[in-house]
Structure formats: C-alpha cells, structure tokens
Image (cartoon, rainbow, N blue to C red; front, side, top):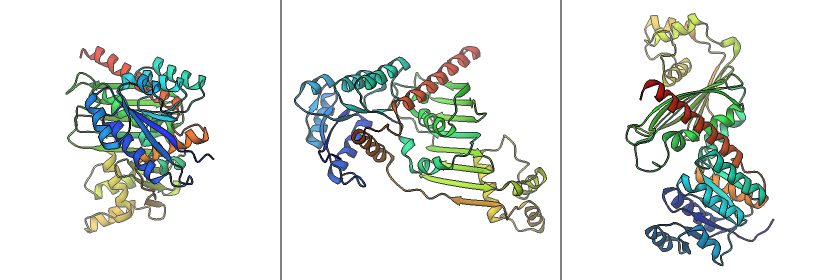
Length: 384
C-alpha cells in the first residue's frame, strides 16, 4: 500500500467544516492507527466568506480559496475532499470535485433533491471516484455494537430532540436531524419502505421544526420517528424490538442496553398486570412511554422498590428470574466524526465501497423527501 500522504481539502468553513478541518489536522499529526500510520496532509480550504478564509488561514496555515473553481485552477494536488457547504450547494461542489478526479465525503444530506443526488452518483461512476455521505451516527460506537445483533427487528422508536439554534435553517428538521435516524433504521431494517405517514409544524422558523413520522416496511416492521429542534432538552435515542429481545440505544452516551427474554419466560398478561400493579401502575398499553417500559423491565432484575407483603407477592408472581437477561453491551468509545473520516480515507486508499455509500445517502434522502411530502399533504388536509 502506498505510503504517499493523501492530500485533502475541506470545502466550507462553517460549523461542520471547522470540525472536519480539526479532525484532518489531528490525523495529519497522529496518522491513522491500524493502517501502518498512513499519513494525510491537509492542503487547502474553500469558503466564499473572506472572514472565514482569514480565520482558517490563521489557524491552520493552509491556502484558502473563495471557490472550488479557484482551488482546481491552482497548482495544488488534492486527492480527497470533504464537502461541508450548505445543502443547496452540495451537488455543485461535489460534481466539480468528482470531475476533477477527487474523491468526496459529503455532509448529510447528500443533496437537496434526488435529481442532484443522481447527478453526484453519475459523476462518481463516470470518473471512478469514491463518494461517502456523512451520516455520522452510522459510526456511533453504539450503532456499531447493535448492527451484528439484528434478528428480524419489528418495531423501532426514535427520538431526536434539540434546543433551537440558527444553524442549518436552510433545511427542515427532517433533513437536519431526523435523517440521521432514517439512515440508521433503513440500514437495520434492511427492507423497502411500504408506507409513510407524517405530521410536522413550523414553530420558530419558516420550515418544519418538529415532526412525527410512522414508517411501515415491506418486512412488516414499523418505525416511529420524532424529531424536534425546538425542544428544551437534548435527546438522541433509538429503541428497537425483535423476537424476545429489546435494545435501547443512546447516541449521546454511546450506550447500548439489551434485554433478552426466552420464549418460555415471557410474561403472561396476568403476570405483567401483577408486576405493574406492584409498581403502582396500571396494565401497560400504548399510552406508556418506552422509558416507563424500560424502567419496569429493569425492575424484573432488581425487584420492586417497596417491600410490603402485597408487593413482594405480586412481584414474585410476575418474576421470570430464570429467563431474563438485562445487560449493557460493550462498546468501543470513539468520536464518530473521526471514525467517519478514517473510514472515508481508508475507502479512498483501498477503492472499496464506503460504509455509507452514495446510494445509502440517496436512499435516506428519498425517504426524507417522501416524509416531507406526507407532512405537506397532512397540513393541506388539516387546513394548516
């Protein structure tokens, strides 16, 4: 394998671009562990803002250009580049780079439309270039740990809530936040989409700021997604259920909790009712949140908090002690962005298909746009 350093550039010096610059400079300093310390060299940055260019030049001591055209017209050699511009400029920047023989990592979503996504994929195919899409959560250690555990997942519940910021207001909450979870669930479900139902509302911007979506897959699996960028708290969780198993994934904490219940130990309705009664709750139904169900499943291991004769008897009647296993799945901590960029650089060197390919990015975009169409149709029916 070549020991010549890969020469990389970053197009866009906003919040995302600055993070890519930071990671590339760290990899330039440290090399890529596990790959014979293969070296890279950060050689350029592109941004139309004079202030951004000045800041990057001062901090990273690399040439900065006002446009991709200026970069390509220079005498710099570039092997690979991150495209971190606003979404509406992804296609223009990426296709120029691809036609110049440069491999690209494109921040999510891949483009603003399917036509633009297809133009990117066509340029990549024509020039035999690598395209990776920046669906960051695919590199979250908890997702990496969950992927090999998939066994016909049938129900997903996703919550991604964020405090309002003026960042990324060029797109709605589906393309800004929910698309992370759409990509992960599409990968884990491994089934075509059958039906989409959705509702969403603008709150603090002119675009949809909060959305709730139900997706049914051809496999019969169902996924519920909630995304908000006007929340008072930050939540990034995904829960999924498959035969005799429940997994709870926390993206922020990079944690994965798994609960196994053997078929013989599954609770009968009477046992479940007794268990919840012992905890001061009615029989569980759809009104209970995943957090409540998770807490009560955990109580099967720890027993009820109260120790009266009545609650002890009820818990004993409900406790399938021989068949329940609740454990935290080991994960290997790591910064998802660094893992994503390392994966991209490895694909550039080996010419292998990236973990998050251009086609993956297109599939996530297609579902996101279908959701937005469903939101618009619901708003019209509701007279909003």
